[in-house]
Amino acid sequence: MLGGTKRMSQNLFKSILIFTFIYGVLSTPPEDPIECSSNNTNCTVTNSYGMFPDRSICQAAQTLYPTTEQELVSMVASAARNKSKMKVATRYSHSIPKLVCPDGQNGVLISTKNLNTILRIDVEGETMTVESGVTLRQVISEAARFELALPYTPYWWGLTIGGLLGTGAHGSSLWGKGSGVHERVVGLRIVTPAGPEEGYAKVWNLSETDEDLNAAKVSLGVLGVVSQVTLKLESRFKRSITYVTKNDSDLGDQVLTFGQQHEFADITWYPSQRKAKYRIDDRVPTNTSGNGLYNFIPFRSTSTAVLAATRTTEDIQEATRDANGKCLGAIAVTGTLAATAFGLTNNGILFTGYPVIGFSNRLQSSGTCLDSPQDVFLTACPWDSRIKGQFFHQTAFSIGLSVVKNFIEDVQKLVDLEPQSLCGLELNNGILMRYVKASSAYLGKTEDAIDFDITYYRSKDPLDARLFQDIYEEIEQMGLFKYGGLPHWGKNRNLGFIGAIGKYPDAGKFLSVKEKYDPQGLFSSEWTDQVLGLTEGITIVKDGCALEGLCICSEDSHCAPSQGYLCRRGRIYKEARVCTRREEESASKSEV
Image (cartoon, rainbow, N blue to C red):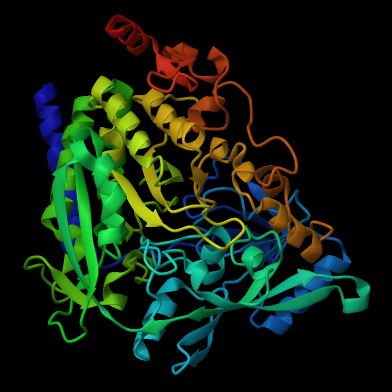
């Protein structure tokens, strides 16, 4: 019977990917993350996944939708005159933490949904000026029309320019200025509160010569509302992509050189399979033959029936502790993705073999589930909270190249102890490793590093422990604390931000600019004050808090003692405190 269940699991995952690959052409687009009762008042806001890390509901008195900078100035002035707290919301709200939440119920949300115009393109000077609600997809497409390119971008095109700048979103590269989009900002206009003598609102027009730009281009939204952004582009070019899978035994050594060898290199790691997938991705002459297209399969629309069946399968695997089933599913998922080249095609239709060559705008980013027609939820983005689909935690941190080999080897030691422990994250296509370069932004990366992006199962019940809970927690704590990892500002659970601001040498400069632009803290909230180290409370200590990363456990009640999970030391990183199941604790002691 167990063998039959495993075969069903494996076949289900294969069917999911085949269906998505062939039929994923329609979807129900995501809804606005803001909901209001009437006349844009009495509002709630969430993220695109329908759940903040602490599962709270964020409220606001009203939502404003400016269509021009002039309207935006008027709205900020009105709120500042009334001393109302304000927060900026984007079209799709892809930041996982509570950056969008104003304090209390009387705050104001300012949506950039309608600030979505590309204002100017200077072909000779290779710049583009856009409103902050313009999406990455718009920038990429419009630049290509003028034979220009934004060379380094995130892989998901549903981010807005204001949103991705606010969280320091990036692609993968150590070349040039690096993969952070904020490194391409040469001009920025931001609307902040002001005193009555300036009409309660002020527009700051920043250029590369203004030191304040180093604060504004990665701002967490606490300085004001970014109105316009000018990006430095370059001539459109072609890229050549080949994926190569190797054993991960020498991964710690390979990562140190691979990013220097290939301009757009990244690595996807499958620790339980002991494999790593290397993306060999470089520029080639524009006259090189090829019209390749990247339409990443997990970013396409997917049958909601298939998504529900997938989620049910993993729920059962978690409840029955079926690690074997997860590992079979992971092999099916990663194998099918590899066989279909992860959504790469040589001509926009078929994949005929590597290398896939095409213009940068067709290969650098994707996300077709966003803009498809309504189909009454026959299909949707896989993480749409209105359906039974993906529901996950996401941990992301950057570890400096100087110590990253040691971190990778520590993770490998954990897998040696529990070989099946990370099959669950391989169901989400493993650990994405992207190269990021030291930044001039005050809250940007402090050294050349690798960003580890880890996505894994989250229970609908916050008091349910996960399969191999302790392994995931130990990896998270090792990355953040043993190796000083910098958190991705737009991802992570609460513990990812513990002591984070102390890792940034220029944090004091950032806070000085914050005081200058918004001395009353109208764009701040309890959450951002905690993240910036201005107040305590980033961790929430209560029964079961460690299960969702709201705290690091210090006593058994922070785990799930009724399910056999107790607070214990880590296996490799002894300073870690993790929720360990009794049977696993006994096995670990017997191994010692």
